[in-house]
Amino acid sequence: QQQVKQSPQSLIVQKGGISIINCAYENTAFDYFPWYQQFPGKGPALLIAIRPDVSEKKEGRFTISFNKSAKQFSLHIMDSQPGDSATYFCAAGYNFNKFYFGSGTKLNVKP
Amino acid sequence: GAVVSQHPSRVICKSGTSVKIECRSLDFQATTMFWYRQFPKQSLMLMATSNEGSKATYEQGVEKDKFLINHASLTLSTLTVTSAHPEDSSFYICSAWTGASDTQYFGPGTRLTVL
Image 1 (cartoon, chains in turn blue, orange):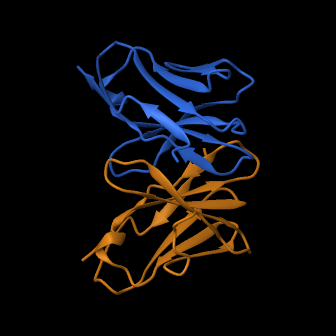
Image 2 (cartoon, each protein chain N blue to C red):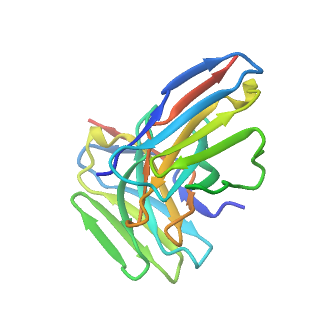
């Protein structure tokens, strides 16, 4: 059973546009929701993370929106740049421990 | 930020041989290390969780006798793929948790190809 569902599978955005990736989870015990960025042949790198007591968190061009009642969270990338082209994974975890990853979204930002 | 290294970055081996992959936390002590497997264009699948000095906890469906994990110190965990077969070819990624922060820090991954 997939613990975290992520969409879309792929996304094409023009330079300067907004990229939006969505995730949904089932387990209400999850208390930590990170987003990771992965380039081909590399390990994932933490981008931004949020806890369920906060509805939104912003770091630079990256914003997480969190809807606890709907059990959904999303990543918004403002002013998307070609260098943002990568695969993005959402994840959910609890007890500072086991993470469950979404299926990934391949983002392509066109110049 | 915290740095995690993996060695080797790439390995090619013959079917039936064993391969050891090292995961090191370079600038912090890792209470817990995790091993993931990632197939091309797919997500990361957690294989096992290891705590220093104790036996690893394997996820359902992961053969503990095939994927041996040793977490001998707070900075080193090893994954040994025993009697490797072509279907074991994959990208193996470790991560480490400091115990003092919220997140896991990932290594760069090891590409295993079994011929």
